Image 1 (cartoon, rainbow, N blue to C red):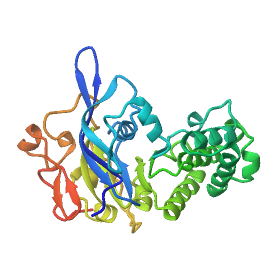
Image 2 (cartoon, rainbow, N blue to C red; image 1 turned 90 degrees about the vertical axis):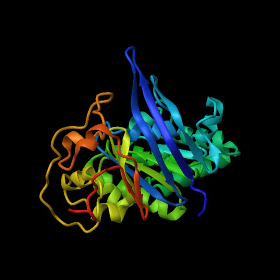
Image 3 (cartoon, rainbow, N blue to C red; image 1 turned 90 degrees about the horizontal axis):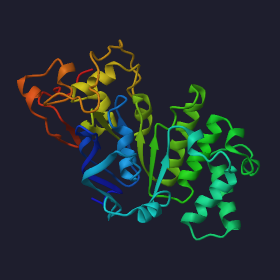
Image 4 (cartoon, rainbow, N blue to C red; image 1 turned 120 degrees about the vertical axis):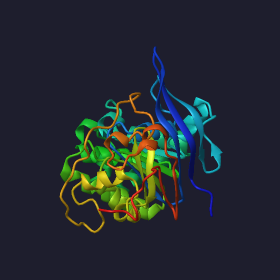
Length: 327
């Protein structure tokens, strides 16, 4: 097999308080292959966005990485200093944040922000950088790209701003794109256009992508594999089709049953919410964090943390997995 573009092993992120050190992410391990889209899904607070921030070392203190390795194309990132990481961000890893308005500088034109980003990462003069900026605005489908270069972010709609953010993230031609809830702040009518744009750009360029979302419908359309997060750990990770049709972890099954028509087949089903709520940060129970909400829990689930294990590309952290998956 070829070397993965991104390889994460044993990642741990903690939050230091006056009373204790709280674990936000615990033993997170996954890889993204060249040209692959890996979707990360889970409820709010599961650790999805923290994972993305940890990869590019943009955790907000007092959050910090305390264990594990992060390797990009054979280069370890977890030991790099801030100066070296600035060369990675944008150039090797592009990032699309949730809110396009807060991702753009409100006092600089779109063109200035694109040109400055391109010049910071590529050996181009101002004229060549402007030409490349115009190319990327055309490629993301922005109407009248030449006029858009002169506009300020507040003069654009939310969907247009997100297209600019995507252009910024891809303008230095990184090997990995991290898209963190890229449609959350947009109107429903705009979300489909942005997802289609990301899918088209991925198909054209073959870039590897980490897609972070709470929407199972999004990953059903976009992802090759899916990692399901729960309370700072991976509950299940497997090929998308396998996960939607044959979930092995009870939490994955619960998410599918609680989501309107998330499968690739589009089959309707009665929505069944998962009882209870995910534990707050630092308030998780002993053993499997999901056991208070799980109808299959046994005594071992209440005292032991199940390891991530499996076969055939499907892995799950459960002592009592679903036999072949049930919907």
